[in-house]
Every structure is written in structure tokens, then in C-alpha cells.
Amino acid sequence: MLAWLESQGHWGFIHVSLAITLILVVADLLPPWLQQRKLKNELRARARREQHRTN
Amino acid sequence: MNPVWRWFHQLGSPPYFYRFATRWMPWFGLSALVLSVIGLYLGMAKAPADYLQGDSFRIIYIHVPAAWMSMFIYVAMAVNGAIALIWRIKLSELLFLACAPIGAMFTAVTLITGMLWGKPTWGAYWVWDARLTSELVLLFLYFGVIGLASAYDDVRQGARAAAVLGLVGVVNVPIIHFSVKWWNTLHQGETIRIMGKSSIDSSMLWPLLIMALATKLYFVFALLLRARGMLLEQERNKQWVREVLSPPQIAGGRS
Image (cartoon, rainbow over all chains, first blue to last red):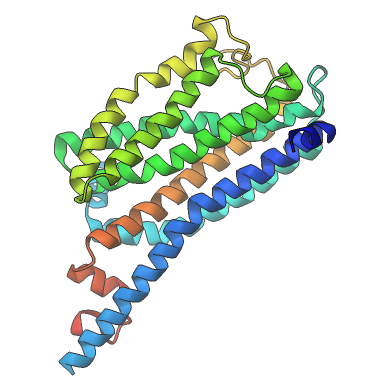
């Protein structure tokens, strides 16, 4: 794999740098975003249940 | 009270912080995205190739802003850690914890892009050079903070224990910064100076400064996102959470 990368020249290194950065940024943002969405849905559902009970 | 101080005090209140983060997060995220696109376009397509390094120098537009952020975030994390230890402000504990994974991400980007730049420039992906080694130590410090904080069941206790490690690790930041001056390293010296003339042409410098601003804005966006999530998790049983998350007809039991 490294031999392939080196055969691509300078732009190969640049493209791989961009791709890895993008992957790491997505990996940084996606888990907290998904977790927060799940938690918000959970809390909203709980609030709705409590509201039904009080009604 | 001074309006800035008042705002700072207000920001310590969880409901205020939640509303502040929800309101400003999209703006920080969007500006970071737009500036990244502009910076990368200028850096990759418009800036001339380096006379010595050729096109491979363009990795600078990812590597250098990421390296700056890896150190900047560590300092920001340590400041929040100190505030958490001294004044026990809940929000500072959360900000401290939220900084660590973002900082680790930037440090990983710095090391990987540095390796990918090193091969065409030095002929090696890795050398045990002072700058590279101290940056690797920074990554381990971030991992240490994340690991130590998550070893505790109580988030607040974990944050305070990890804050001690975070504060001790601050000593590594000046080592990274001055490593190219203190030791004879393979890594190139300072190119951009805040005081004095930078040894880089403005056509190459501007995209770099735009990328530096983009990474700062990204950091604020990611920090607000993570801290908001942690705050929600910690305060899930509080009335204000019920109020901000519920549709108007069920908020706080109002009709």
C-alpha cells in the first residue's frame, strides 16, 4: 500500500492527507452528534409520557 | 458589573450555556466549513508550488493549522482544568472533558499529515526528532486525559482527576514550540512569525491564515457540540432540560 502511495507522486500524499483529515473530522463529530440526537429523543419521549400521565 | 464579566458569569449557568450553544453552533460550523473550502481552494489550486519541495508543501494547509490547534486546545483544556479544580465550576469540567477528544483528533491529523509530508521531503515517514516526538507525547497526554476521566463512574470526579494530569502535561507545550530552537532537528524552523517578518510569500501565507481561522471556528463548533451533549446527559432530570426540549404545549406542564 505504501509503495502504491509513493508511486502516486506528491499529489498522492496530498490526497491521502485530505482524505484522512476528513475521516478524522467525521469521526470526531458524528458520535457526539448521534448520541445527542438519541438522548434528546429519549428525553422528549419521557416528557410526553409524563404529560400523558398528568392529563 | 462589567458587561463582559456578567456574560461570563451567565455562561456558567447550564440553561444559559445550552441556549447559547444551540444558537451559535450552526454559525461557527458554517463559517468553519466556508473558510475551509476557501482556504483549501486557495492553497491547493492557487498558491504556487514551492521551489524546493514542489507540490508536497501544500500539505502545510492541513498540517500547520492542525499543529497550532493541537497546542492551543491543550492550553484551553488546561485552563478549564485549572478552573474546574480551583472553583469547581461544572461547566469548566465539561469544557475540559470536551476539549480532549478534539485536541487528540487535531494531534493525530498533525502526526499523520506530517508523516505524509515527511516522506517526499525527508525520504522517511518518521524520525525520532524532537518536534515529532514531543507532538507524539502530546497525543499520549490527550489519550491519558480521556482514559483517566472515563475510568471514574462519576463524571465530575473523573474530570477533576484528569485535570491534574492535564495541568502537569502543559509543560510539554513549550517543549513542542521551542523544540526546533533548542535542539538540532530535522523539522524545519519557524516560518511564520507574529513579531517580525515571516519567511513565506503572501500568496502562500493567506490560505494558511484562512485555514488557521477555519480550524479555530471548527474547534468552537465541536466544543459547543460536545459540551452541550454532556450537559444534557448530566442535567437530564432537571426542569430546565424538560423546558428546552419539550414542545410548547408540554413544556413544564404548561398548556
